[in-house]
Amino acid sequence: MANCNIQSHNVTESPFLQQIFDAKYTVNKTLRKSANGVIYAATDNFTKEQLVLKQIAKRPDDIFKNRLSMEIQLHEAASRACPDNIAEFYEYYERNQSSIANYVIAMERPKNSIDIFQFVSRFGRMSPLHGQWVMAQLVQTALKLKEAGVCHHDIKDENILVSLTDFKVKLIDFGCAKVQSNLPQKRFCGTELFFPPEFFRLKRYFQDRVTVWQLGCVMFIVLVGKLPFTTKDDVVRNLWIANRPELRTIHPCAADLISQMLHPDQIKRIRLEDIFCHPFWSIKF
Image (cartoon, rainbow, N blue to C red; front, top):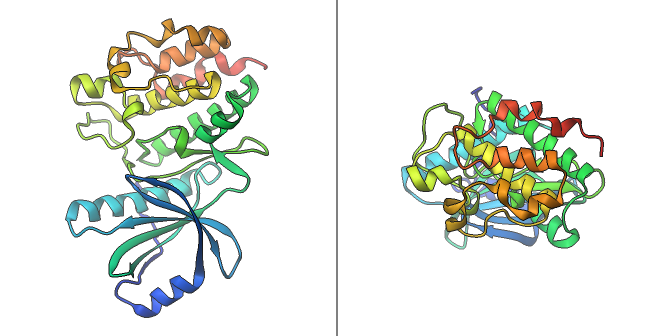
């Protein structure tokens, strides 16, 4: 992976820089709280741009420092590799607030966009045309990330912003991202309902096959309008999603591609590089 040019400002050690940070940004509201941090909507007081601030509580252990460094570097690398479909990384600060040390990452907030979870909750499933366009962008983004040496590891409905104007997507939250590897992995960071079955059964997995599985989950949500699995046991017991009655409500080619992406046998699961070879993409909705 190419070296990243990170804009780092250690305001913990510099009260002057902390004053600059406090003068530069105004926090408007809390957008989301997760295991990876707290997400705020904010305003750049100088440019008036609306953006996102992600605050992460600082811990002294080396594992945390390495994890944070990895998130920042991989987000910046991903932003360079896929500028059209990754929320742009701006800069990060270390700062003290009320005697609590935090890291704060500043990043793009796409205009007139909501995440796919919010979209489906508000409007229901997408039309076949819009769903096809959204998924094409996500698959292309996953391929570009792999080429750049980045595996997101947490592709899910809440981490994908979609524009209400033109359905352009932006992938967000690189808190679980790792350097791309072809070796089997044992430690998993992400959202349990989007874990593939081999993680629960074998306690090991391959990154590419996880990416395909997570893309399949998102495609199911986009075109069917609900989660494919609601518990860990659902994932483990899944014999093959091709038998699910919900897939009979969508185009057969779309159902077939989802079934190949969510195949419970990771060896038989469609390869990331082969997804665009599927006839689903040639359908004119």
